[in-house]
Each structure stands twice: as structure tokens, then as C-alpha cells.
Image 1: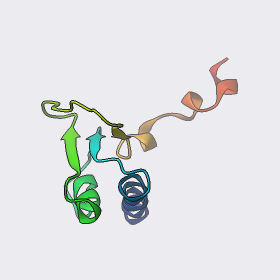
Image 2 (image 1 turned 180 degrees about the horizontal axis):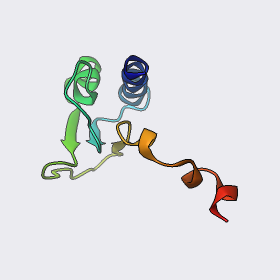
Image 3 (image 1 turned 90 degrees about the vertical axis):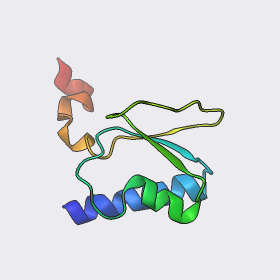
Image 4 (image 1 turned 180 degrees about the vertical axis):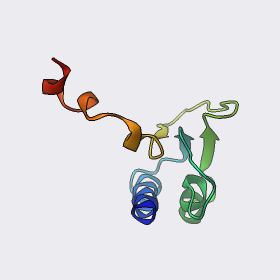
Length: 88
């Protein structure tokens, strides 16, 4: 599961940096330090990519779109957030 999650993160970041040309990233719920973190994956493609982590002081002053990364917390969101029928 962790390997698949990391591969997904890498594919998403590769698309955002390469195709969408997004450079600033705001990573919320960054998880445990490991290989291929958001900034590592982004900076392999675009060395000028930057990362702000929600755990620290935010220094984003975006003049361009910012990628909001929620990869570390999406698995914790309960199904009823995504299924309107279960909110009754």
C-alpha cells in the first residue's frame, strides 16, 4: 500500500510539474520522511519547484497556481465526505 501511494504521488507531481507547469506546492499531511517526497519528485523535473509544508510557517506568495497536496490525509477521510447519500 505504501509503495503504491508513493508511486501515485510521483505520477501526480510529475504531471503537475511537467504538463501543468506548476512550481509551488503546499503539502498538507506530509507523512513520514521517505524517498520520493513531493519536493524531490518535483525538483527532479523542475529544479525551481518549491514546497511549503503546513506543519511549518507558510511562505507561499503565489503569483501562479499552487498545487495543494493532500496525499497523506486522503486515506483518513471517511466515505461520507465523498458520498452525498450517506450524509442523510
